[in-house]
Amino acid sequence: MSAAHVVVIGAGIIGAATALGALREGFRVTILEPGEPGGEQAASYGNGCWLSPMSVIPPAGPGLWKKVPGFLADPLGPLAIRWSYLPKVLPWLARYLWAGWTEAKVLRAAQALRPLLVDAPALHRELAESAGVGHLIERRGLVYIYETREQFEREALAWRVRKQVGIEWLELDADEMRQREPELDRRYTFGALVEEGGHCRDPGAYVAALVAQAQAEGAALQQARATGFRVEGGRLKAVRTEGGEIGCDRAVICAGAHSKPLAAAVGSRVPLETERGYHAMVRDAEVGPRTPMMPYDGKMSITWTDRGLRCAGQVEIAGLDAAPNWKRAEILRDHLLRSFPGLPRDLPADRVKVWMGHRPSMPDGLPCMGPSAATPDVLLAFGHGHVGLVAAPRTARAVLDLLQGRQPALPMERFSPTRFA
Ligand SMILES: Cc1cc2nc3c(=O)[nH]c(=O)nc-3n(C[C@H](O)[C@H](O)[C@H](O)COP(=O)(O)OP(=O)(O)OC[C@H]3O[C@@H](n4cnc5c(N)ncnc54)[C@H](O)[C@@H]3O)c2cc1C
Image (cartoon, rainbow, N blue to C red; front, side, top):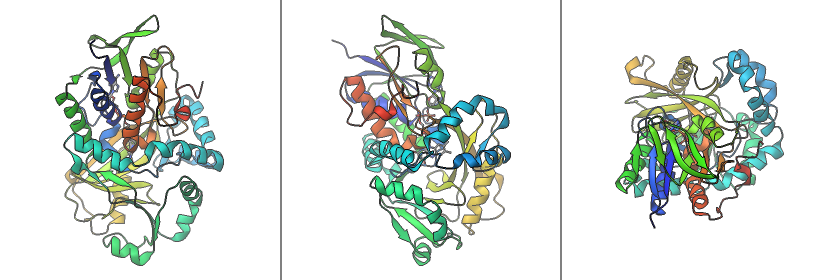
C-alpha cells in the first residue's frame, strides 16, 4: 500500500517542522508555499529569535482594558490599535482582554502553554541538527532587564505565575549586570535571568534548512497558494491551489496569520487576527548583549543573529493589508541605541534593516490545533501568536500524533479549534 499523502500548507516554522516530522513518520509529503521557505513574507523570518519556555503569559493581563484608550490614542505605543480597524477587531479585542481578565485566567493559560514550550531549546537543537544546522540553536539563557527592582516588582503577577508553572530564574543585581553585560547602559540595574531559555541565530535560515532537508528526504515543494479543499463524503480528496488541485489524503493548515479563510473553507470559524510586529537590525554592530535580553521599558527583544543585531517587538492591531508604519521600527532602533551607548548615534540607513510581520494570534494567546469541522483529514495548526518559534517542535509532534491517530502526549483541550464556538 502506498504511503498516505499529506499536503502541508505554509512553510513557516510550524509547516517546516511538521513536514519534516511527517516524512520521518512515513507519509508522502507535499509542502505548499507561495513564497520562499524562510523568506520575509513569514513571521518565522523576522521574529525575536527567542526560544523561551517561559513565554507562558498571555498578551493581555488583568486591568489591560483600562489602557485601551491609550492604545487608540498613541499610534506609536508598544501596543497600538488603528482607529480604522477598530470596528472589525472589536469582537477579537473583547475576547483578548477577557482572556487575561483575572490572575486565575492568566494562570490557566500558562498551565496550558507550559507543556507546549518546555524543553524547547533542546528540542530545537535536535531538530536543527537533523537538518545539519545545529549551530543555529544556542542555549545561553535569556534575561529580562529593568532599571530598578521596583520595575521588576510591577510585573510580579507574571513572575508569580511563571513560578507556579515551574519556571525558575536568577536575580541579578547592578554589579552582576555590569559584569555580565559591560556594554549595556548603566541605567539597567536589575535582571531576571532564565537559564533554560535559548535562541535561534537565524530563524529564516533555520526554516529554509528544514525545508531543504525535507526535500532531500523526499518531500515535494510546490510554489503555490492554497485556496481551498475538495472534500467528498467527509473525506479529503484534494487541496485546491491557484494552479489547480493536488490530490491527497490529509492536509495540515500552517499558513500562519493567513490561515483563517482556509480554516473556514473546511467549516472551522476561528477568531484569528494578526498582531503585527516589527524588527530593526543593525549590520556589523559594534557592541551588543552577551545574553539575549528584553528591556522592560522597550518591550522588545535584543538578540545577536548571524545577520546582525536584531531588536524585535511592538504590537500593532491593523489587519493584514494596511501598509507598515516604519516609525515603529525606528522606535525599536532608537531604543536599541539608548540601551547600548557604544553603538554609533549616526548609524547610516544602509546598516539598519527594518521588517514588519504578522503574528498569527488567537485572542487567548493559545494556538489552534486539531481537526477541522468538515473533515478529520484536514488539521489546523496555527495561531501561535508570540510563541510560534519556540512552540514549533511540540506543535509538530502533536500534529503527527493526530495524523497517526495517536493520542497526543500534550493536553490538547485548550488548543481546540472549537473552543470559541
Ligand atoms: C516581531 C515579532 C517577534 C516575534 N518574536 C518571537 C520570538 O522571539 N519567539 C517566538 O517563539 N515567536 C516569536 N514571534 C512569533 C512567531 O514568529 C510566530 O508565531 C511564528 O513564526 C508563526 O509561524 P507560522 O509557521 O505559523 O507562520 P509564518 O511563519 O507566518 O508562516 C506561514 C507561511 O504560510 C504561507 N502561506 C500564507 N498563505 C498561504 C496559502 N494560502 N497557501 C500556502 N501557504 C501560505 C506564508 O507565505 C508563510 O510562509 C514573533 C513574531 C513577530 C512578528
